[in-house]
Amino acid sequence: MTTLRLPAFDPATLPEHRGSGYPEPFRSRMGDRVKRRLGEACGLTRFGINLVTLGPGGQSALRHWHTLEDEFVYVLSGEIVLITDGGEQVLGPGMCAGYPAGSRDAHHFVNRHRDPAVYLEIGNRTPGDVAFYPDDDLMWGEDEKGEFAAHKDGRRY
Amino acid sequence: MTTLRLPAFDPATLPEHRGSGYPEPFRSRMGDRVKRRLGEACGLTRFGINLVTLGPGGQSALRHWHTLEDEFVYVLSGEIVLITDGGEQVLGPGMCAGYPAGSRDAHHFVNRHRDPAVYLEIGNRTPGDVAFYPDDDLMWGEDEKGEFAAHKDGRRY
Image (cartoon, rainbow over all chains, first blue to last red):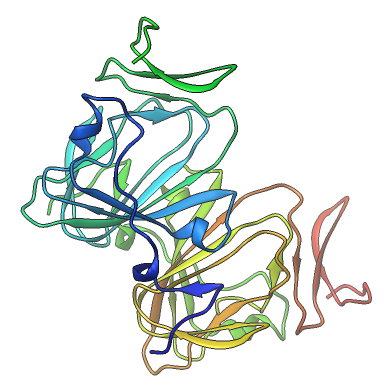
């Protein structure tokens, strides 16, 4: 197959993004999580779409829900555990899950398998969206300086 | 694997949607095209995400571009030909393409292979979005009765 040119591309040609915006002790929980930003690579702005490789022991995010963002995940390979208010479910390749904006059923993926898992994550971009973390002492806020991470009582991290 | 429950699900459990809203002679060109509506299945409204199986000879759509909709496609299996203003490219599994809202580079997929191709298609939902079809005598309009399909000179199909 010859080299693709935009608007088509091979995700393997994109840079890998590691790390997380969470403060510690939350950041480390994400483990070995690598994202390739597919939507940005072709100039999309209305929604984001990432190709994520989640290493053994890693997490997609802290368990959370969004006020204004629909989210969707599609598993490409490996095996992940979806955790929601309703408990745990194991998802393999070809399985998916979606979380409507404003649904308070907090969710995340964890990888308890010995192999990496690969999935697509998609979410619309809407100004004013807020995320809540029922299991953790974390809130995101916004003041005149921009976004901040705080304890639930307001003390900044 | 046990049966999944929402917000997780197996796309194979969803109904198949065939057919197209295009008038003839365009509708028949789509060929054997089956869509499963993944986003709707879990209550998403901000964007749509479909799992599409495109049979040999089929097309994803007429070649088009959108004023207000970002679109993205990710190939899961098979081989498709992406056609844009820049010509043709062959995409296999794991390859993708994205079309920013307002980019006038009209695009579609055609399946020239002997096997079906399977891909995910994603697009945000925005009121007032319009699509244009540079290769075909078709326009979508909207009047007080709703959407209509017309020739480019305004005569209704």
